[in-house]
Length: 376
Image (cartoon, helix red, strand yellow):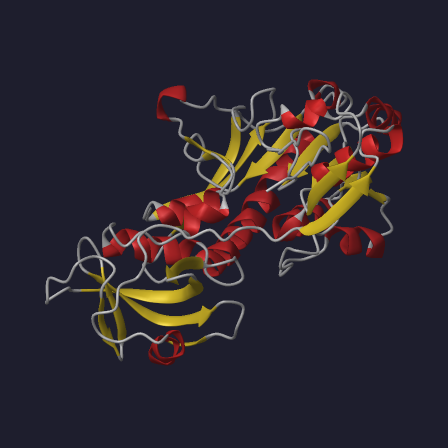
């Protein structure tokens, strides 16, 4: 059976290897290029494809008509998606007469959407799993082909749970892929009444609000511990990251955000206290909590911020003479789009650049005779 595969991350590697082991002919693999700003701790689908002699592509827009035509020419019997980050269009899904199937990192219909691994830890779940389901137009909503359950222990963090899910996925695929190949499998519709959906996580989701219970903050720490970016807080404007923690009692009834002790480093929360076992200041190195307290200048009674602190973005200042002309106008537009420049302009007229001052996200100041444009 000929397959076209969309895959990324460790789960993508697991899926590709499982297909090869099950005797599928993989006509092509579509993956993503790694983001230089992302800590790539996971396996490379492109390297696996290259070592297996399989054509591999990483288009920015796989749903473009040219790519749809190329996939159509491959004439796949079946399509598989293993942690591919883009939704596939109906046109692509319809190209596989035997169907299109996706591997999702939760027990559907629970935790549809993005980052289920992290969200189950944030929410303190004790069980999750992986699901192989038929792909339909709506994300993660197709009929279930197979599921594998995974227990979440109190000591699990994002990386340990990730490894558990990869192992579960391997076991699931070893059983499900041969069945799909022969057509000897059953599908079960998802129960919509039980469905939950979560969106993409943002950096602010990992901010530690000390007005929350210690158990909730501990779950936040578990959900994004290394190699994820980590949960964080501030001492004044100094950001620090918490890599591991423990829930403790707040015997002194201190106000949330108060440093109860520095050795161990113990912070009062709305309910209980959070011990910071390991962390780091700014972009520095990881260290134990007591050393972190020393680096941050904390003493018993110090208060941590309960609101995220944002610092103003520094921009390069640029002066454009003749800003209202054709070249100056377009150069200004380009610089403002990049959002890395503070633009000043001088000219005898303002008709061409008046559209910039109307943009709510780009405030300008204008003088009567010389037009001064500024992005704060």
